[in-house]
Image (cartoon, rainbow, N blue to C red; front, side, top):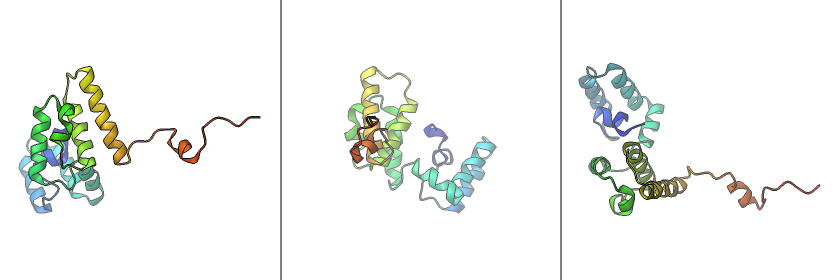
Length: 150
């Protein structure tokens, strides 16, 4: 999902916005694209669907800092080069989401920038438990993955 399609961004709300204000914002935006706005409203007001919206946003980060991050994501073609500086104080899930959204927005990455972005994405994915390498379980158990001798 691109950042501009995320329900929080589309409705102009934060994870701290109350239900009444969410419904008001959705009502104001409904004329632009009724189907998308209705879907976004449902995603942020339905308790189970809201979890997905919050996890794919910037949970635990203040609305002011989220706005700063979004501005930086839109205007920084070299985010991977200044990753620690730009995303300092942001938890690993927030870093992962920021970098994933940034990658979706960038159309002209150089090879080294792309490689560095993937390195940061992999590092943050591992830190939040999203990364799984097929050999991890075997290494932990001491099994090298080779078939037994017959």
